Image (spheres, rainbow, N blue to C red):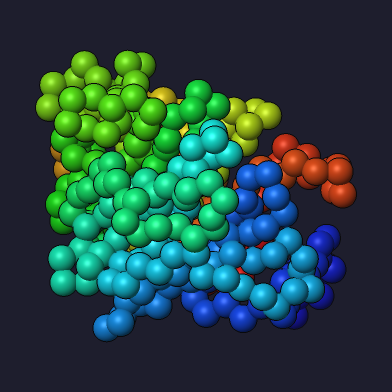
Length: 311
């Protein structure tokens, strides 16, 4: 017979209820203001993405288009730490549909303007990705840009990309966007873990991930958290450290998946958090809460599941 479910500790409340967002994927606060930037995407035969500006007033219904990218799925946006001075905005996208490639791009917003000029695009990195694109960006405390990338396919890692270091797939990347190097518009930080490993892409900071769709950086603690979408049975979240190998596709979470496949050069690190598919089916990720409204949650990692709606 069982017993009634206990009441939930918290409830969710809708905000910006007057704004109609079709296909919202991302939202980020504009530095130095209360305005929000939201990414909306339509996916299919007419794939396109927009960056929308929302006023800081949650009661407002106004939106303004800052950038439109036809033929690309736009996944995330990050402001340069010196955005107020240089106007640099970084975008992670994938496309076009007929030849899908991940791309990390810098745009520059001129002083006094709000729109993001498409002609200011500078491509920093680009690589093949036909599914499990990953797609998040943030700037760390040292001013370096971090990016999350998936294994580039849609089922069982047929490229064996999760454990390989000779590509940019299935990884967390870390680059210095302020110092060009030769023909590259960035430099690889000297303390990246695989700089001296033969045939390894030096941009890799950690690897062994299937589809790290969302990640976040908690400045007070210095923690990097990433949510990784699982395949058959397990969803995971990881507290990321330099050089870690999270096991995909030799393991799914802490469980053997293809145990006979070649492994990367560093030991496998089990997930920090793991959910069976009976509980979660698409762990999106989350943030570390910092605030005064709920002091009992200060420093706690709060994450959600797309399929079940649980937080």
